[in-house]
Image (cartoon, rainbow over all chains, first blue to last red; front, side, top):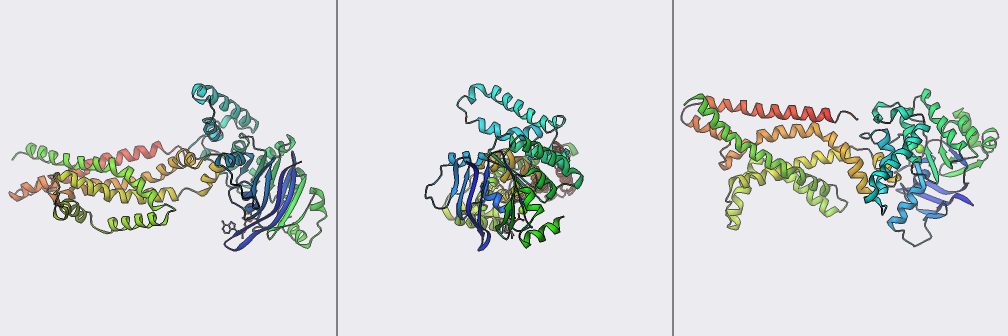
Length: 259
Length: 213
Ligand SMILES: Nc1ncnc2c1ncn2[C@@H]1O[C@H](COP(=O)(O)OP(=O)(O)O)[C@@H](O)[C@H]1O
Ligand SMILES: [Mg+2]
C-alpha cells in the first residue's frame, strides 16, 4: 500500500489556480523527485501535504491517515492534527534553524516539548531529556556534525546549517521527509555535502520527496520523478525514463534549459 | 547656599524622577505587550480600537496627557486625584505603553515567517513556537530601540513638574526663583549620569545577546 497518496489536489491563491488536480502515489522506502520550472507549484504542493497550507479540493493520505479530504465533513481534533503533522517532515530551502539555540538544542527542542505530554514526564524529566539528547547526538554524529553540537547556526556554513535542519526534521521520525530545494540557497561547493546526506538517507530507505533542480542528483537518487508544469503533473515516470526519454515538448524544453 | 546643600536638594528631586521612571517601566512594559496583541489581533474591532487609541496617545503631547489624567477625574467625575505621583505614573504608563507596543510590534513583525513554519512542521503548538522560538529573537531585536526609548523616558520624567511634582528641574527652579540660576543647568549632570548608566546597561545587554544573529 502507498505511504503517500495525493488525489485530485487543487489549490488557489486569490483566484489564481496554482495546483490544478495533482495525483500521485508513493511507496514506502521510495524516493520521488519533483522537477519543474519556477512557479509551477512545487512548493505549494509540498506546503499542502505538510499542512503549511490548506488545499481547496482533493485528498491527501499519509501513512494510513487521511490528513486532508475536501469531501469529508469530519473535523479533525487538534490532537489528530498534531499527529498528522508529525507524519511529515519538511526541510526548507532557507533552513529556518532557530538562531538562539545551538545545534543540539535546535534538534532536541521539539522533542523535549513533545515529551511534556508524556504521563511520566514530571517524575522522569531528567532521564527523558538525557534520552532525547543521546538520540539527537547519534543523529548529529551521523551527519558528521559532532564537533558542532554547541555551535550556533550563525557559526556554521550553509551546508552545515542545512544538515542540521535535516537532522532536526529526521529526529521526529516522520513517515515521509520532504525537501524543498534543499541546496538552492547554498554556494555550489557546499551542495555536495548536503546531497551526500540525502543520498545516505535514500540508502537507508527513508521515504523522501525532493524538489530539486539538480538533475544528475535526481536521476541518481530517485525511484520516480514527476515533472510539474503550470499546476499539473505534465509527465512522470522512472528517473531514467523521464530524463533520458522525455515525451512532452515542455519537459524537453525544461531539460535543455537546466542542463 | 552651599554647593553640597544644592546637590542633595537636587538629588531628592531626582528621586522623584527615578520613582516615576521605575513605575513607568514596571507597568508599561507588560501593558505595551497587551496593546501589541490588541493591535495585531485578527478580531477587527479590537484591532482598530487599539490602533486608534495608540494613535491618540502618540499624537498628543505627554504634557497634555498629564493634565488630563490629573484634572479630569476631579473636574468631570468629582473625584479629584489625591496623589500627584499616581496621576503622573498613570499618564506615563499609558503613554509609554503605546510607544513600547509599537516597538514590540516592529520586533514581532520582523521575525521571518519561516520561524513559525519551522515550529509548526516540528509539531510545536502556536504558543510553544511563540514563547520558545520567536520571543527571544524579538527581545534581541528590540533592545536597541528600547534603549533609545528609555533614554527619552528618563528625560521626559521632568515633565511631571507641570502637575507640581518636585522632580529635579522643579527643585532647581526654586533656586532660580531666588535669583540663583546655575542649579538649573547643573541638573543636566544628573540626567547625563542616569542616561550614562542606562547606556552602559544596554550595551552590556546587547553584548549578552550577541552570541546569535
Ligand atoms: N501565498 C501565496 N499567495 C499568492 N500566490 C502564491 C502564494 N504562494 C505561491 N503563490 C503563487 O503560486 C505559484 C506557484 O508558486 P510555487 O508553488 O512557489 O512554485 P514553485 O515552487 O514551483 O516555484 C506562483 O505563481 C506563486 O506566485
Ligand atoms: Mg519553490
